[in-house]
Each structure stands twice: as C-alpha cells, then as structure tokens.
Length: 93
Image (tube, rainbow, N blue to C red):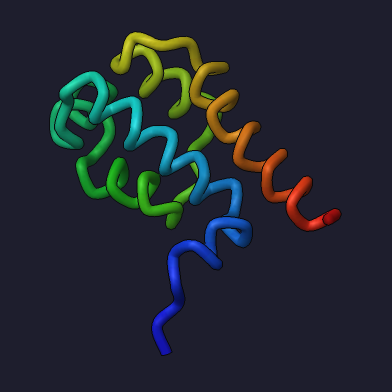
C-alpha cells in the first residue's frame, strides 16, 4: 500500500529532514546534484542518497556541502529544527 505524503511528514527521520533542507537550498541556489558533488568532493550518488534521507552525513560533509551552497552549516540544521518542533508539537496535541 502506498503511503500518503501528508501523513508521513510527521514520521520523517532526521536524515530525511536534512535531505529535504539540502535539496531546498540546492534548488534555491540553482545548483544540480552534480555541481554540489563535484565542488564538495563527493560522488553524485552520495549527494542523492543524502537528499533522499538514505545516508546520514558526517559533520565534515555538512560543512563541505554548506560551503558549496554558500550557507552556514547551522542554516541547514536550523531548517530541520522547525520541522522537528512541528512534529513534536503536533504529537502532543
């Protein structure tokens, strides 16, 4: 059975939330996965796996990718904090 995206939003893992944040910033900057991978020194498939929440990036990876995206690493993490807070708040209701 196929899951509905809306109901799954609250169940996303931290890796999935980071992947969403990474993809959003990358697209806002008009960059491809290939460009981010090349400039950060990682394989394109690895960047794709991070964006899909399949891999948990190291601190080194977060810093490197953030540099390519021209944002502070903390900005990527701040983007997931809001989603985590919403999920927690929604569960307590």
